[in-house]
Length: 303
Image 1 (cartoon, rainbow, N blue to C red):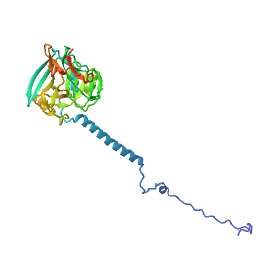
Image 2 (cartoon, rainbow, N blue to C red):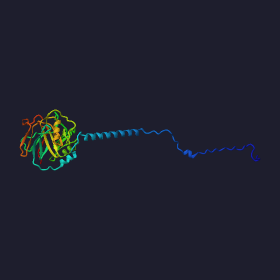
Image 3 (cartoon, one colour):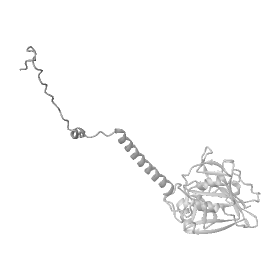
Image 4 (cartoon, helix red, strand yellow):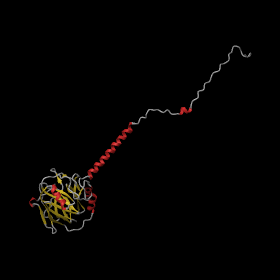
């Protein structure tokens, strides 16, 4: 004991210092959980919606293709090819209708070959004294209320629009074509050219008969037909079914042919000298019941 230290004071006790070392490597290691991550439900909804949209688009594309291209028959001339024919400058020819007769498969046919004439749709029945008219006949069908069946363009004015009937006749720029298509390309072109266009039933397409006919029974039949680039008006001399009439046209050699209504309706044609010849009974002229409603297909001298 130090004698100089007061006796009443005790020494201060030592305090132990405890140091805790941290494992820095362990502290920086991320904690990995075995719990699976939750996917956002919106991603699944979006994926399913896109899948159904893709399926719907594919079905729509297939139905559209099937509707416009699977016609039940093959075609000999596409709409684009017929438009090119309508655009061509008509070859100058003397106007005349040449009438011949034939009998095919027991079906008597009167065949009128059109030369140097241009067709149009008119609603006034031509006068028998009108020397500018070389042939006229019926064209599009109509209902009792006066509405028309199938697409109909008269001198550039659209009066009806329906492509359920696949046969058509188009007239523009002094040219006439007969074709088979559901497409309205030709109709739209004709409208821009102030031409005429109508639709009717198929009788022959690319030398083939359609799979079915929609009119039954035996009546006098009429048609507009094509062999190469030559256009014809054809009538049956007797009552025929649609099938027998169409089969005779096919056998004769028509590439395409469409039906024309009004088998016994009066009409006329003119020969090279301009002489008028009656088709059917002249006592039935003029037609009074549907005056102003019937769309007449009228062929006049090409300009």
